[in-house]
Image 1 (tube, helix red, strand yellow):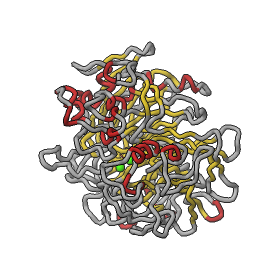
Image 2: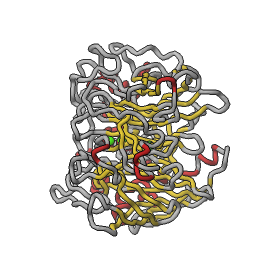
Image 3: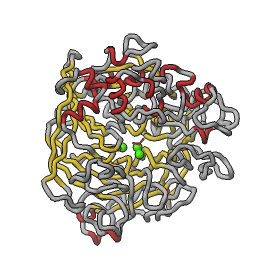
Image 4: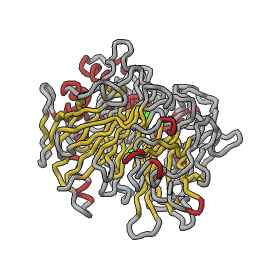
Length: 588
Ligand code: FEO
Ligand code: CA
Ligand code: CA
Ligand code: CA
């Protein structure tokens, strides 16, 4: 196609302009409707949401707070029915409880907060007329909370590193927390990354063991981080009282949405880090390659290559795939000068550990056992010589072009206070706006090449790059977080933390031909919200609106958003469906 032929299929919509409205803005000729919001009923018997009469028991049956990842899985044999799987990353107690005293929850408030975390499986019904989705409150639905039992798999399972006061076997972990992005596997399960888990633990300053303290420090544990204060009511969240509990979070979790009674898994073969997500590519011989990023400044990109092959229709076998194989971490090298227009190079994957089919595990890192690599993966990656990145968020293989896309969201500390300066793949000091990495990976192998598709920020600034497309014709994008693909192969990016004086939003980006790099904004979310979990279907876009009204320090006690209920209501995180008038193709 030529530039004069106009935007690619899937990108033919009038872009939404940057704005700071307290509303979800969509293109002209499109419609929207909330699918479910914090507090809405999920399980049979759940009460309707009542802001002034919350209980832990009610919350455990209702939709949780701060939805992040969303996936839509068709229900076999039932027309237009789906499992909507959504995680609930964290709670903002100031917005949940009237008169909340910061860091001083009552036991009732702490237990509501625990129940508002985790994962929701919700049956939804589509419509033949439009893109709306209606919750079906029935036996298929499930709430997984900070209390639900998980089984730990991989080299960490059963080792002393993960034995706790309540679990002397080191195999059963209560709850999943801090779930950020995720992915849907080819075998129909949900993956979700446990990310900022140190924010849930107290007592760092009381840890006297030097090794334990250094390990916690490498993961960012600190005395002030725990704004939830669950440890007041559950001693397992006090590092001084139950030192190994912290080693039981920070994994990729896997949930079978088709069986609400199934025990979800935590996969230690994918390492323990601040996992943003995990997304899968399957090679021609059925090998599974799972990509995952560690979202913190100067952290790394990883991949897991399975030794088991996919077996069609064998869910039990397939849910064991992420337990056997090799974990790698990425080192990037530059073969060109550092320039945002010209950033490209090669790279290699360093082996960290391998798990054999009998479950025995081998460390590839001197001085560390395989169990230590699985639990203290950041320390192993440090020794392997991996490249320190600008906060790797979502990473996802393209469904058809063979490439892998990663959102490097920002890194305001790059080149500051003695921290590492720019390199070819992280080319800017004090990087406020982030970049999109495009890797051409030898998926099951150990080498790759890479390119920067976008170097985000104000297109009028010289240090930005929009894939070579005319920068006067693009929507400005900043702080990419989640990535997804539409059925035409265009990349879609949701943002978190827009540094360009606009609300966050969702953008489509052309990858091929002479429109490569064309970037168009499809929607903006309400004030101070983050755009998450996008699902780009043929005729429906689903987006999670996370933390509307929240300021970055979590301490705002006066919400400056009243979305979605309006008036003087409290803001409520919610999942929204967007479709075109007449239910036509998105961007068609
Ligand atoms: Fe929860 Fe990395 O964003
Ligand atoms: Ca994220
Ligand atoms: Ca994604
Ligand atoms: Ca983010």
